[in-house]
View (tube, helix red, strand yellow):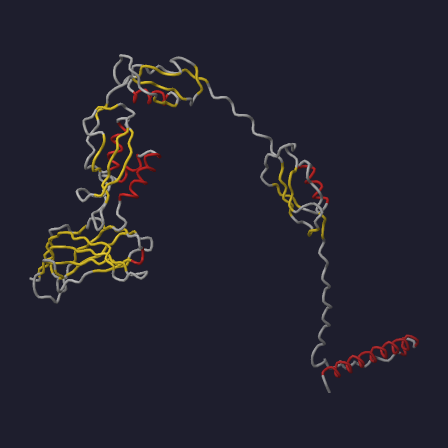
Length: 425
C-alpha cells in the first residue's frame, strides 16, 4: 500500500473512532453514575510512517507598479513646486540655478522629466530655479598716481606696479634732460586714477650701445636685447661654423648706437644637410621660460627652420673620456636624437679604432621612438674572452631609414672622438 493510501486510511479510521467515541459518551451520559463501568484503556493508534506534507501556498500575484503624472512646475516657486510634487507622489532635486532673462528669481525655469509624462511613484524630478542677475561690478577704487619723473624706466615701472598701476613706456623724447630718465607721465602725479589703470611714462631719448651677440645661443641673445629695451627679429642661414641655433651675425653690428625701440636682426645658424652637431639655442633651458609670449612664438617659428630634422646630440660617456677599464667592465653611452621618420629609423652606435670596427667589442643598435624623439642609453663592453688590450678612439653613430620603400637610406652619421682603453691584464 502506498504512503498516500496509508495516510488516507489512517485519517478515515481516526474519524470513525472519534465519531464512535462521541456516541459512547452520549450513551454513558444517560446511564446513572453508579452503573457506569470503568472505561477500558484505549489502545493508541500507530503513527503514520511519514507526516503529511503541508500544501504549498499559491504564488503571489504580481502587484502593479504605482505611477504618477508629472505636474507642470515651471513658473512655480521652489516651495510651491515641492508641495505639488509631493502631493503627486514624486521627489524633488534642485539643480544649479541659472540666470534666465525675464524669469523671476527663485521660480522654476526647467524640469526633468517634462510635465505630463507618466512615471513611477517616487521618481526624482530635477528642477532648475532662476537666479538673480549678478550685480554690476563696483567701480574700481580711485587712488593717487605717484610721481615717477626723474627715475629710470625700470625704477618707474616697479614703483607704478607696486602702487597698483599698469606701467607703459611711451616713445622717448629729446627735452634736454638726463638720457633714459622719465621726463613725462600721464596721468600726472597726484591725480586720481582707477586702480589697475595704465600710467604712461615718457623717457628722455637715449642712445643704446648694441651688444655683441654673435656665437651666443639665440635665447641668450634675445634676453640681453630685452633687458636693454631693444626689439629683435630673426632669420636663418646655413652654416658649419657654429652649432645650429647659435647667433651667426647681427644687424646693427656690435657697438652701434641705436634708439630704445630699434629692432636688432639676428641671423641664426641653420644645420646644413648631414650636420649632426647638437643644437645650441640656450645656455640654460630654464631661460626659455623667461621669454615673453611674443618672443616665445617667434623663437619657436625660427627654430623650426633652424634645427635639423634628423640629429644626434653630443655623446655623453660615463665614466668620462679618457677612461681606463678592465675587460668585462663597461662604459655607458647616452645621447638624445630626433628624426622625422619616427619608428622607420634605425640608429647604430659603433665603437671604432682607426676607422674600423673592433673585434671583441660589439656595437649597439636600436629603433627610434614612434614620435621620432628620445634619449638612448646603452653600454659598450670588451668581451672577457678577448686576450689582449683594446682601444676605442671613436664612437660612430649612423641613422638609417628602413621603412616606406627606403631600405638602408643613410640619413645622418656623426663621429665623436673618445679615448677608452680596455685592459685584459
